[in-house]
Amino acid sequence: MKTFQPYSLKNITLKNRIVMAPMCMNMAIDGKPTDFHYIHYGNAALGEVGLIIVEATGVTEEGRILEKDLGIWNDEQIIGHREIVRLTKKYGSHVGIQLGHAGRKCGIDTLTSLAPSPLPFSHQYQVPKEMTKEDIKRVQLAFQAGAKRSLDAGYELIELHGAHGYLIHEFLSPVSNKRLDEYGGSRENRVRFLIETIAMVKEVIPKDFPLTLRVSAADYVEGGIDIDEMVEIIDLVKKDLDLIHVSSGGLDENQKINTYPGYQVKFAETIKRKCEIDTIAMGLITLLDQVEEILQHNRADLVALGRMLLRDPFMVVREGQGEARPLNAYTRGFPNLPRL
Image (cartoon, rainbow, N blue to C red; front, side, top):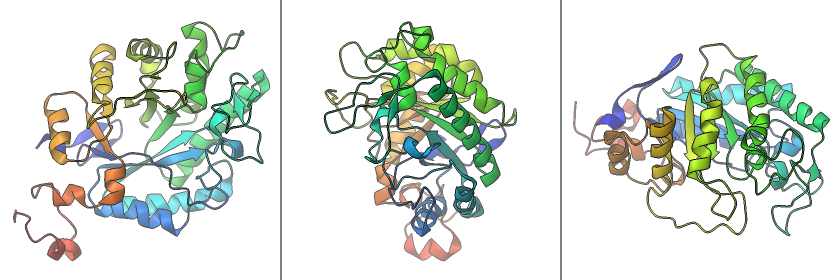
């Protein structure tokens, strides 16, 4: 099965092509990981996941989506992240972290949300402060500092969260970015915040360290990003990235999405072929047969599983036809595995 073939990404080699997608667990305290995170990510490693991407982690306090999201805006938070890395690597997975800023979708009422333009996500959210040039620089420096702390914690990959209506996505989309300065208007201007942020992160990471980007390939609203626009955006930034993690939506509450198993795979396939860059596919993928079909037909290079791994952290072993082996302590729990 191609699912269980190794995959090399800069200085790491994954044992298989399965990724645990970053999913906010809302279990942190003051941005710090808790025992829940150690169990959650440790289970994924025991379950033979090739790459674990730790959930969206706020680079500033107001960069969290919700109050109990993970953070990496101060040095005290590094300790818990080190423990996540230690556990997951000990049991055979590689582990990266997704760095993000919630932008106008910060759901913490006691903090002032920031955005390219003063447009709320919905009536349930506060009107965000339009970012000044000073705000932009401060947040970009926070991404850079978050990258440094991620290295200190031992993470092996950094993913920038440019999807789902959060800050980077808000700059990219003409629906949420109505600025009249060099950060708004034309495509090149709307991509400027991302280009500058990538450059600042790359200043502090080694040359052989993987840097990836998660994107929403479609906004699903009139006037928003579609796959053709996203291809143009990726072409502007791909030289400084190693992989594109392809999702969709999340920018506008009026989005209309037709969901079905694998509904986002077509976007990963298009970006892979037109932009000539490796991609991670995702989107209601619940079976290893789906994963194998995607990989066999070269529609993506890796496949991310999300809620399926929450429900069944051992699905990779259970459905892996003996190609993914549990630890000896667990073999009695998988009596039907072929003996290699």
